Length: 316
Ligand code: FAD
Image 1 (cartoon, rainbow, N blue to C red):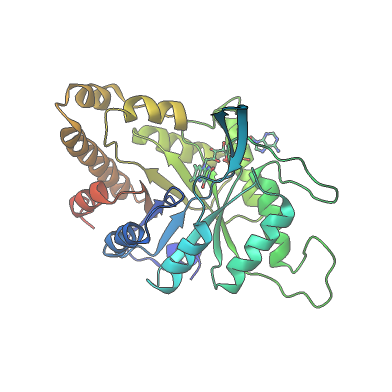
Image 2 (cartoon, rainbow, N blue to C red):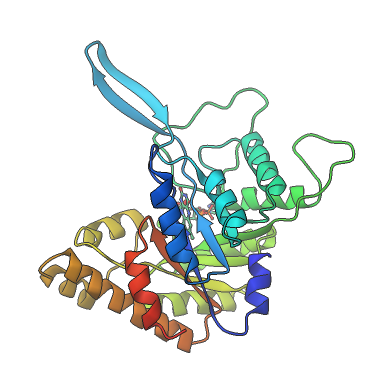
């Protein structure tokens, strides 16, 4: 079932999760354990992130050596597991950065044959490795270009003209930023880019994480003022370690409110931090659900411990 159909059919608010593939060489057992933990909360869909190749520099006896590798492969396999072993709709993230349009078309064909017809179309951040475009290859620069490519495939328009091509049937989600994307000049301009992605064929928006619901409500207001009517799913992350106080703002460009930051800084250890983070995220979730959001999306990444503690506290 499509994400948009889940949202439209829901009589109660939904919850969904986002996980990250393990580092190269990660164990299948721990991945299955994570999915089983999440499946127990009966999410209608689970997102799986994608990661571009990065350049890694190593010192060797003969000098510095550059290697290019994907640290977290496996998005396609994990999607197949979630969709077919657990019967939960998988939502792979599809990136512009790191992939040519030709590779993207191939990836989407794999998904189509696997019966996976939901994707989140994302630009990706500039990677330390940008491969040269070979002759005849092309690149999507912005997420809206990627949404257009997927929209074309949904109309049986592939990169080369094909006789008797059959259309794909993808439901496409895109990202939104309650505290604005860090490259955008202001929130209104950034929201106009969200509108562009929806105009290109996306059906719904999932937001970047935020720790103060006012950011989400202001973002939704700006979207509605600009005429956006698509569902806007809030993204929530549980803060679980003291290190998150610096890594989250620098990586995701979002504020940690003073009250939360002070409480975490004063916590004796990371068990106490997790409890503070769970309670904060539970309070955020309850307030969002009370305000009538269509669904809450949790950034689980690789460990379900905090989510297992949180879900029973949100009263769904
Ligand atoms: P875009 O929508 O393309 O926007 C990027 C910036 O360009 C914005 O500032 C926008 O205002 C501006 N812009 C857009 N179109 C134009 C235009 N035509 N001309 C000029 N400016 C324009 N990263 C990963 O590597 N893997 C993942 O799986 C992943 N999943 C994510 C999931 C969610 C829900 C979110 C919120 C983020 C995710 N990210 C992921 C991070 C994402 O790659 C970065 O935030 C990236 O910098 C922007 O991606 P985007 O799709 O929002 O880009």
